[in-house]
Image (cartoon, rainbow, N blue to C red; front, side, top):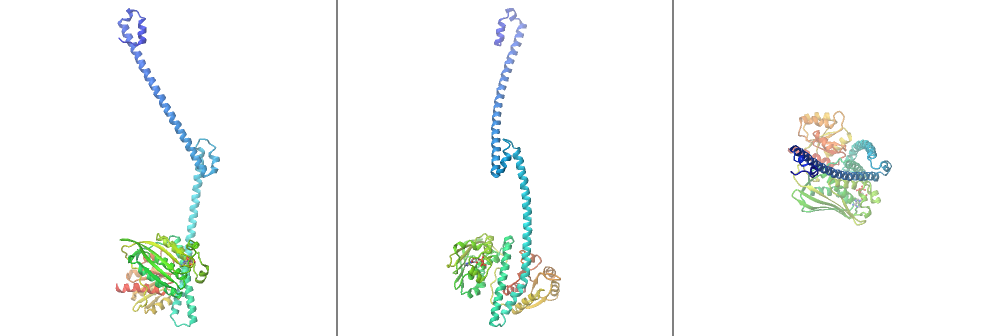
Length: 502
Ligand code: ADP
């Protein structure tokens, strides 16, 4: 029997008789077993102790690491806060490694931010109220100015057709130019305000580019000739015939540029050029440029002239007027088209203004620019004019009569509804603000029994959503007052003929 060595030593001290006694043998075996068990347990305990020690070391090491990271993070946080707000140092440095002061400080800051935010929101609301009040004011003012201006411009046009003494003719022309300048100024101010308020949304209708350019040339030809200028058009053959876009706004950009070119050039040439930059099956990029051989602009003033109310040449401005809003509007309208406008000019060497627009060229449902026709004739057309302002009635009636059209008058919406129940007309010209029944209500009544007749709103309102509002009430289109005779003719001619042939 192999016994534990300690037990072995003790057994040596026993007498042989005792050593081989079976009871002693059994006892010794049990003692031996206990020794072995004890040793096993001891080893396990030692092992466990060693394992614990190792784990403890690891944990300690990790804790130290984490503590270092924590301290570094707290320091970084402190540094960041102090870099942002140096006065915070006094508060947060008071505590060496703790977060309590930092948290308290940040809570305070968040509270402050919230208060500032609330104040900002209040200020923004106030500013919006102010801006709404401003645009309401502008729109009322413009309505009040446009209404009499409509009569002034209309009567001046009518008088120009009479036999006049040369001195009367001169005065009348001056009156006409002043009235049109005033109108342009009001329109510019309103347009600028509308653009600034983000109220202009571009339409997407068919534009025939060549026709548009020709119309612009025609519109400026007389004035150009008066200043000894000729206007040329250069149209690239590679241009698509039609594109989709906002003809009114694109036309406005070109009108402004050509008008400036004519204004700042004497005995020179103005060139309107349209070139294809990139033509693909469904899109086209078109470069528009307006070049003149006029006074030019000094280099250092190139950037300035696009600012509102800024003019490069005070003498010329004194001679021809102008608000300094034209190019500011042009720049913003170009931006609405995702485009920018460039000027290339030197003093005394003429100027070129250019911009590129990317158009879609898909199918469109609306007709594009009508040619400005030479001879105006409305023979056989019967117009119902619904208008309460006596002067405006007189102007529109005379104009239509001059084009051989027949006019019947209704002084308010209710009278118009009655007349339409009993008489046939080809077109209705409907003022919007009238006593008894306004133009919107009258149109709603008329649409209950007459779906087809074209109803054109005549309005001095400058509100941005006027087209949408008039359409919602069932009107066909609208004409802004004051209108020029050609615009009134074009409107009546286009819609009444379409009505007659439908
Ligand atoms: P306005 O023509 O009403 O003064 P604009 O904003 O259209 O305002 O033009 C700003 C200024 O830029 C003009 O006053 C003029 O000094 C200059 N300018 C614009 N177009 C031309 C041009 N074609 N030739 C010379 N100067 C021009």
